[in-house]
Image (tube, rainbow, N blue to C red; front, side, top):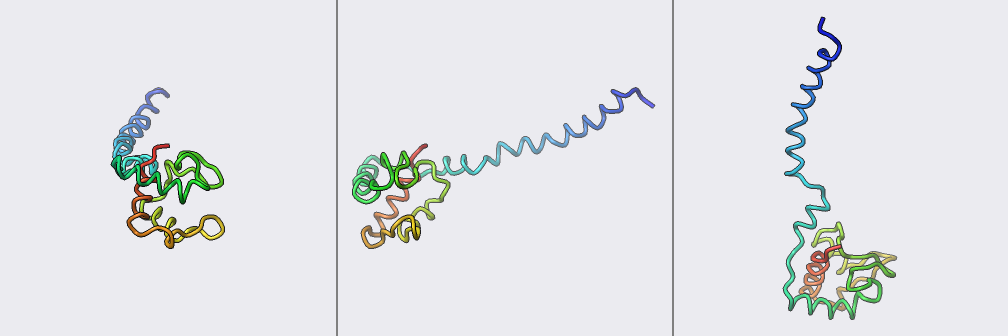
Length: 122
C-alpha cells in the first residue's frame, strides 16, 4: 500500500481534471447580471434627449436622477428586468406601486423608455 500522501494524490488529481471543464464553461455562461448588462441596447443622443424629456414629465416624480437613484420608486439603472418586461411594466404599471402609463404614452414612447431604462448603467 503506498504511503498516505500518494494515496490521496490520485483522487485529488481526478477531481482537478474533472473540474477543469466546469471552470472553462463559467466564462461562456456569465451570471444573469452580466448577461443583462451586455445585452443593454444602445441609445442614440437624440433618443436619450427625448427619453429624458419624457422621464422628467412622467417618471421623475418617483424615480430619481433620470432613473439613476431610488426615490419614492426604485432605482432603474441596472434593472434585472428584460426590455420587454420594462415595456409591460410601463404600459400596465404594478398595482399598488406604479400607475399604468398606456393612457399617457404611445407604444413608440413606451418602447423608447424601456430601451432608455435598459441602457442605464448602475
